[in-house]
Image 1 (cartoon, rainbow, N blue to C red):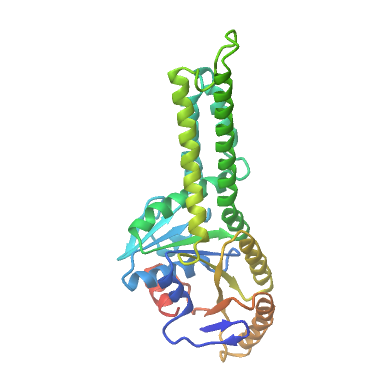
Image 2 (image 1 turned 90 degrees about the horizontal axis):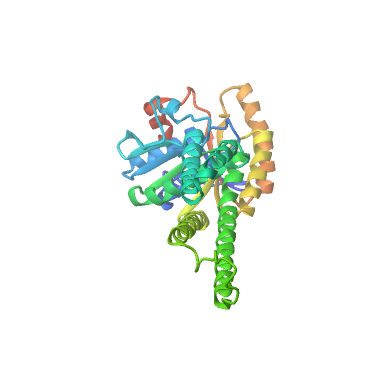
Length: 342
């Protein structure tokens, strides 16, 4: 194992970079290109912290869930006990979208005339596969997990989807907050206009359908609309605050020492930095060991060339290298051994 800052290697003894982050933060996101070992690394870190006595929640937001395969047990949308101090959740995108649309549909049904319900249902069905719907629904689930989980757990670890999906997800809190804020401001503007029209009170022939002149039922509907918007604003602004809190939240990019993962890591770092998400660590997984024969030595030298590109572009980011294991990391026993090598 190696720990590097830019081009120089630093030894930390038993106090490793990843574990120090896990000890210091409340929320850890692991992202990177598909197939580089995000699930294994994030699970090993979560297990290591649980073994130290912390209460940890491990969450997979990747549609291609691997946590259940990794731990060799069924894991679903509700916390499942893996071992003492460690629970795991797999956020199901389809189920999350269905629950999200059901909530929206129910709210719209209560606000709109019965004659419009079939149109609402038709629109909800078409919206299920609309661009961004899965990300928005998963984002709400992440917000709920963080808001609820911080009360029960010392650390929440997120194993995220491949780079492009994760980059879009991290930008969404700001977008959704701004969008909801815009809706609220439009409601407030409409209410002020209604108040102005009501105070004029000169045209008795015009039916007063403003807020002040609405029926009790219509006023209750307006109140529910405002409550829904305010609740969503609070949820997304709260999540945005958590993601921006560098004392509480950190992002780790996992990669392989190969050309495409290195280039994708540089791009992901740029996207996350632009979104205001701080990256505290790079983890180069499955490094070829040295002194194990000519083939692996040559492989290691090629990896060093790729990592030179990484160091030049992201020279200020701490880096931890994890070496290729002799066997696949599977099951609790395999993860226990891997966690010891962190």
